[in-house]
Structures are given as structure tokens and as C-alpha cells.
Image 1 (cartoon, helix red, strand yellow):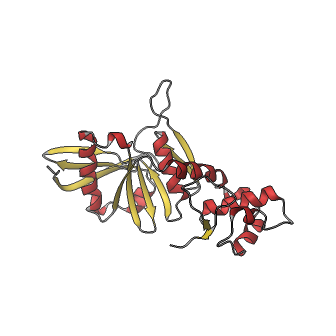
Image 2: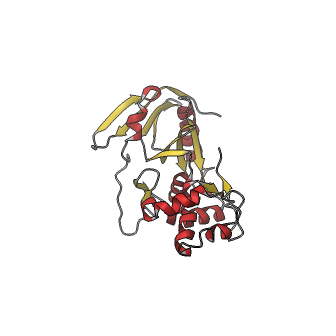
Image 3: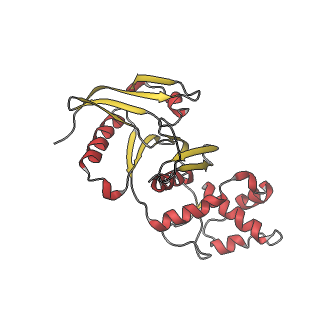
Length: 243
């Protein structure tokens, strides 16, 4: 039996100055307000907590973004790696709706502002998705989010090797650590179809470790791409990014 969401759907947002704006109508809530939202829940660490919480410095945002589990950190790194994602908001709002005669509330994990429009994301381990209370919450949240023409995503464990590769490349995400002239020289080169090992040797007059780091930075930034489903090696072939 499906869930029935009754309008109006409303949301509450914590602003950058920590004031709360409550019960905005979902279809007309300003995107600029949501973009600048602070995490809805109070973020705490304490001894013995079950979840692995922390902050991650996002190159996309240029600031720290919170996560409350290792799985959320994984989704956060995938978003930060994706050239189509322009902004990331953690715990962006409290969503409220009348569902099957009761007021239901839910705080999504992330709001991604992408080239293809906003995406609301919930992160949950795959083995918990079939729990009735989880399935129910995600079903009405999907209805509410998509009623505005936005996308809704439930994200579970990714391909392990892809996550490992993105975690490795994230070490090269900080643009200011790289020589801009060196990066410009590599950007000007035709890297499409070149092996990763050949790219590392492309500028023999420059220190090899700096060239290697700059190539990996270009991989992180999306200038070129590689297959992420197997361990990185010198034999990987670079491809120019295209949408």
C-alpha cells in the first residue's frame, strides 16, 4: 500500500546566523535560503558514540561539511569529486508533511546543487532499506521532493574500488597546493588517450613528484577522467572530460 502525502508540505531551515525559519511552503521555499542553510541537527562528538562523525573539507564548497557516518562521508566525497555538483549542504532542512493522517518529519542528509538541478540525498546502509519505517520515510520524502521537480536519491554502499580511488584522489583536491604554471602546462597538453604513467613523465624538466601530483589534481578536478572500478595504475588511460 502506497503512502499518501497531503499538501501543503512545509520545511524549516536553520540560517547562517543560527536563527530558524519555520514552516515555509515547500514549493516556494527560496533556493538561496537553502543554499546557505546550516545543519539542522546540533553536531556533537562524545565518547562511546556509535556513529563515526566528523567534518570534511570540501573543494566544491571551499569549507568544511559535516557527516554523521562513514557512509555519509563516502557520499560527500563522491559529490565533491563530481564536476556537475556546484554546492553541497548537509542536513539542509526539516521536512514536514501530512502522511496517512499524521504529521511526519524528516531531515535529509544532503542537498546537492548540480548542473542538472537540485538533488536531495538520504544515505542509508543497504541492509536497512527494507525496514518498514525506513522504507515508509523514504517513500513519502520521495513524493514530497519530486513534487517540486527536484530529484531524490537514496544512496547506499558504492563499488568499493571506486570509493578507494576517490578517497585517494581527494588528497589532491586543494588547488592552492599546486604550482599554477605547472598545472597550466599540463592542461595545455593533449592528455586524451595518454596513459597515467606517460602523463607523469610528460614534463621531464620539472620534478617528477610535482608533475605526478599535478596530474592527480587534474584527475580530481575533472579536467581528465579514468576508469575508477579497478586499482589505479600507470596503465590507466586518461580521457578528456565531456558531459
